Image 1 (cartoon, one colour):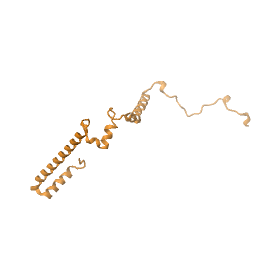
Image 2 (cartoon, rainbow, N blue to C red):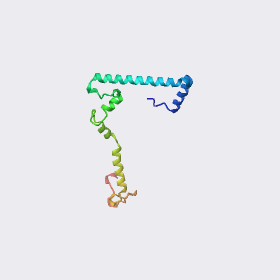
Image 3 (spheres, rainbow, N blue to C red):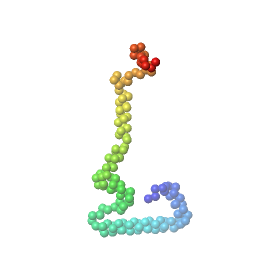
Image 4 (cartoon, helix red, strand yellow):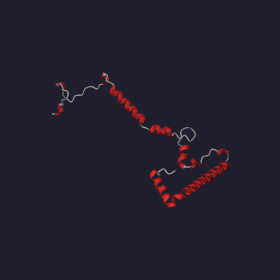
Length: 144
């Protein structure tokens, strides 16, 4: 319910409660607060049961948490098990996921690096110009 309340905050609240109410009245106040919380929960449960009984037998497994927008969307739209709408979101998510394609490229590079056969070796490249024979020299008589 309160995810940001840690041990230091609880310790501070306990010290503050002891200072405000005193050690004599503190157990009575804790009992009355616990009783109030129990009554609120009982009223909430009875209201939920009343709504379920008014809705009828087709809504007997209706959960009020499903009315939260995030839970509703997750349960009825985004699930891929066939109970909700099947919008093909899993296919889209898999198509846009680059991990499979990157794995294929990595495997291809790995096999190319490991392949040491002569056909895989590239021809040697030299930076020297090939010497031309005089009969192959380009000559244009009209250029002179």
